[in-house]
Image 1 (cartoon, rainbow, N blue to C red):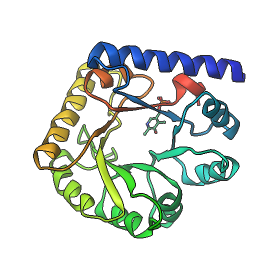
Image 2: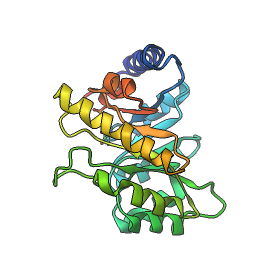
Image 3: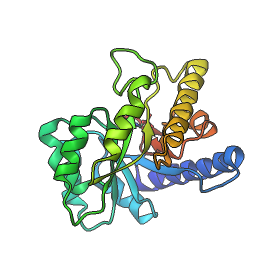
Image 4: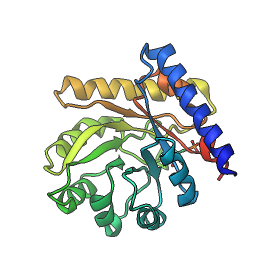
Length: 228
Ligand SMILES: *Cc1c(COP(=O)(O)O)cnc(C)c1O
């Protein structure tokens, strides 16, 4: 894709997010865009950075690690939105600003231990398995509060909230149920006095429903960068 087209698509997504934020939440700034750049080159990231974009999402640690080197002159907030194997946690602890996919205490503890003390705490979200299917990532709804309490006790992490990838985004009713569950779990954390402010949900295909359901961060890839 040409850089001109990329910028146009990016501006279209930004305008759409503002419009939906205004429409559903009466606040144009209620929703933060995370531009999901997995599989796309560093040059595309640099182009959007020059347009003012600061939050970028990546899934694959190896690929992301190369990009951090190619883009080390930029002040990017990197969001890790893919699974983290234990043996890859160190670079995440050192170079990411956020991890959205915390699904067990062990990886949370490891990231906290490996987070350099001169860095601010690593922002983290717990990934929820909103459909409860065994083949999906994330923790079951019933285990969210327990894990949230464990994570919030770790010194070098800051628990920000919850994240999900809906099981069947093409099924409007199922989607609405899963987003409603996220809202309910989020309120449960607040009721338990956990200081959370983030609902990370909404991708290219389901951004409007997610914003309507209270998303604070949307993770948009293909609508900006094109098909992978
Ligand atoms: C790839 C990915 C996205 C972006 O998806 P698009 O449909 O391309 O917008 C968002 N979240 C996660 C967890 C992803 O893996």
